[in-house]
Length: 266
Image 1 (cartoon, helix red, strand yellow):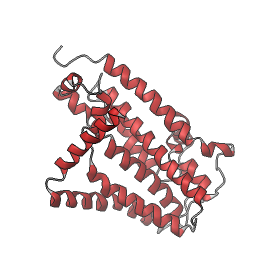
Image 2 (cartoon, one colour):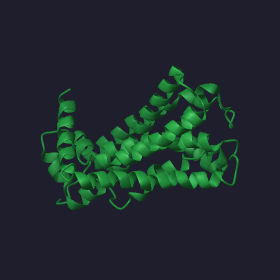
Image 3 (cartoon, rainbow, N blue to C red):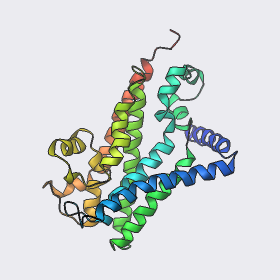
Image 4 (spheres, one colour):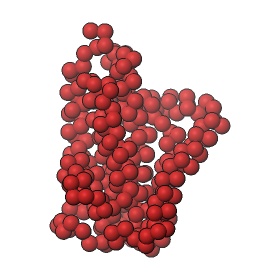
């Protein structure tokens, strides 16, 4: 509870700073909404030429897109400090973080809480809600609860990747493109059903960096669609385990990096 209170106090200070210029803040939120909405417009153009893609309709893909977009936007907003960690290492600012009497992890989580990502979150939610209604899934409380759990699991998953990317910077501050392949690249890849990709890439998204558990397998349950790969039915419910396992491994990796960090002045 003590660290939670500190976290909220630090985030509150960051938010007050970002809200100093309200007009600029509002314009940036709107800009985020418009720019990211063009991604889904591109998907709509594709479906203007095809009725479906591998058996997936526009609004079924919209469900996938909305799920991954919301999860990633919330993760990026909450863990922005880790996403910008390479700059902190390069400028030597991490040394000051280590000297403060507050947990390093808490400081990084609250370092650059980016409320402007509300634009992207709103856009993703809008696509998700419209797709849900167009698919006539209804108000089944079990499926709604399942969707909320899938979104929370996706947030944890993407936060873990951002933290892992930050940890790599302890050894190479120029290696941020690697985690970006699995964050920004992962968002693009999982905006479509993974069944459209080649086998080697599908296996990567299922077994190596299991991004398929962010939205694809949960969506199979929500949409009552058959699994195109013939996996057991229970695999659709493994997404919380995948996200929690990845986060635990990532935190261990992060702690290892912190313990072996050598100051820029050493």
